[in-house]
Structure formats: C-alpha cells, structure tokens
Image 1 (cartoon, rainbow, N blue to C red):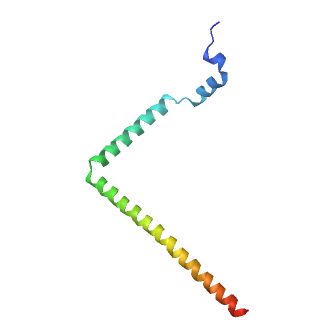
Image 2: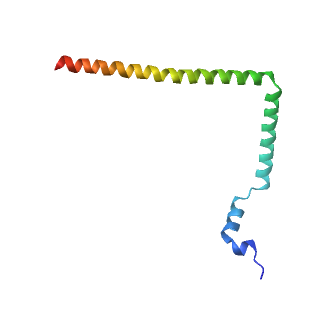
Image 3: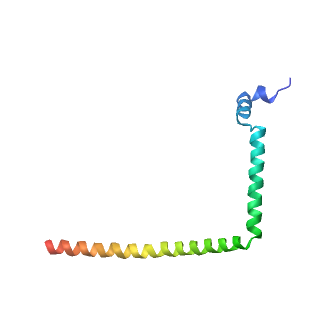
Length: 93
C-alpha cells in the first residue's frame, strides 16, 4: 500500500495550499529583492554610505555616554531628595 503525503497529512496539505505564494507574489518578491540588492551595492560602493556609518557610530557612542551619565545623575538626584526628605522630617519632629 502506497501512502501519499495528502493521505498521511491532510492538514499539512491544506496548510500548504493556503500559504503557498502565487506567481505574482513570487515575482513581486524577486523585484523587491533586486531593489534591495541594488541599494546595498550602491551603499557599499558609495563614499556617502561610509559617512552614514560613521555618523551612526558617533550617535551610538553619544547615546551610550548619555545613558551611562544619566545613571550617575539619577543616583545623585535620588540621594539629594532623600537628604531633603530626612531634613524636613527632622525639622517637623
């Protein structure tokens, strides 16, 4: 007895029929991939692409430094408000 995929996995066959892309969708995907490939190749061979990467690295470095600095500032502000709260509590007691 020979078993076909459809007899063993009827739900899988139904799933494949529902999710398989049409020829138009495949063609559209190929066109989009070609556009993406062309854009990437242009950026690779362009001097402006290198500048863009350098600017992105500088922005990332500034963001990292700001985040690290904000942690210290937040700790100092928290300590200051705690000291003010302690002083107000002691003054009202």
